[in-house]
Image (tube, rainbow, N blue to C red; front, side, top):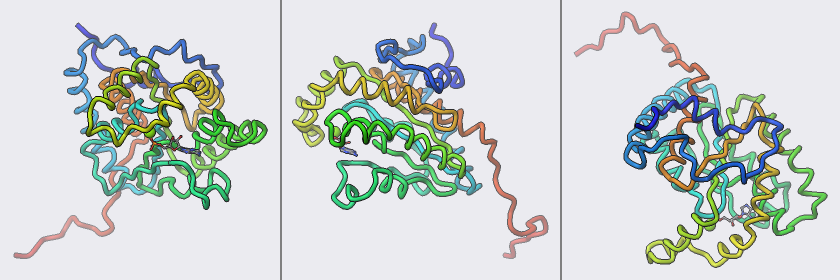
Length: 278
Ligand code: AMP
Ligand code: MG
């Protein structure tokens, strides 16, 4: 018998304690917290989480008070797109937006690296998912030396200050690192190669990034060690099993949104005597 899913415990297990030093070799990408129900049971739990998320998002939108920012980071094939599709299934698209950060345009590069990011942050009642984020500016930028070390090394403090500003102004921030093994990435890249309908997702550049695996793992370790805070925690999400990855992200989000104790706003008018005429 696999243990029952307790979203609170799942959420806690993978949250990065602020100030702790992270070694990714200590974090098993295929961990399932003792669940052995596999895909089938995982799907059942996820559909429960989907429903809770749907109601919580409706409350968020109706209350029009909090702003929610979800950051997704991870190596190619780690499942950023999959999380967006599966965890947010059923959520009203009116209140949720996805912002994807690609190679910066010349206009973006002419500004500081947070310029394009700040524009995409959520407004009141809104939930925004970042598919990649400002963290690329201490990941790909660092690994490829796109700016000198003295420039990228200052960015951890800048990012913490930026996220603190957002949080103090009412933004709830959750950050997820989708942790996969190098072997699992190989299998997923191979699956893309084997399926013509997935070729559009494959770029030769992905293989170049794969060759820099250790450099990326080190860059991620620094991100996780230096930028997990009470106001913007990181979660290390074991992502070799897709169903479990979705459960971890869904649980963390549902738990955090429940803490807000949101309620529907009172109607603008007194509705107690209203009669709708025939
Ligand atoms: P994808 O997410 O597969 O569509 O690819 C987006 C690409 O944009 C990835 O290779 C990222 O590393 C790259 N990218 C995102 N942000 C930056 C950035 N600030 N500087 C350089 N490359 C970036
Ligand atoms: Mg890609």
